[in-house]
Length: 193
Image 1 (cartoon, rainbow, N blue to C red):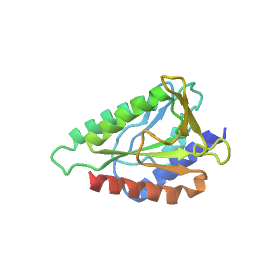
Image 2 (image 1 turned 45 degrees about the vertical axis):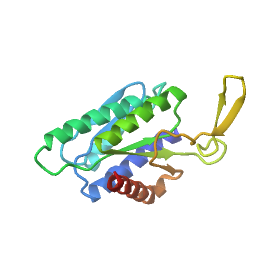
Image 3 (image 1 turned 135 degrees about the horizontal axis):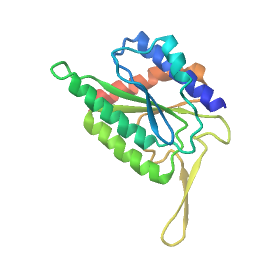
Image 4 (image 1 turned 90 degrees about the horizontal axis):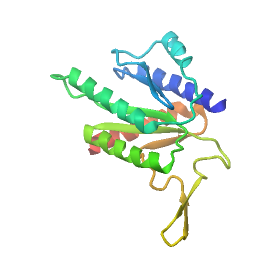
């Protein structure tokens, strides 16, 4: 499955980049029907060998993608990490979410709430959208909505998107530049807050 390969390649590149930046604590979770914590905060990024073992635990076989549950779990884990670092400088906290970015209307509402909760907690959420060029591209998708009178409204899928900070990644080889753009958005977001 090309999406699974792209997601794992993106994860490897993200972890490698964060390791090179000495970014601090890192946690990795898989999400689908349920959220599975694969690498809890342990004070270091996983080694390449650990990351290879983690990659085998991603199944990409779930029927649903419960991104809202992932964000709720991530925010709770980050809150606990902040409490553990009490007395030291407040950590900068970032959730890098790798996904195809396709969420139904009810998930969008939950994601908007989780995004507001993240902002209130001082956590930046950056979505790395794995996209496919062509007709299946998220940039080409549209949403059809019906009003009370039965009228139809068509709008681009990304209008009203629940994540203000996202980057579209079409080629995993572009991830270093994409990660740089995502981190730039994160720093801008953090300094504006």
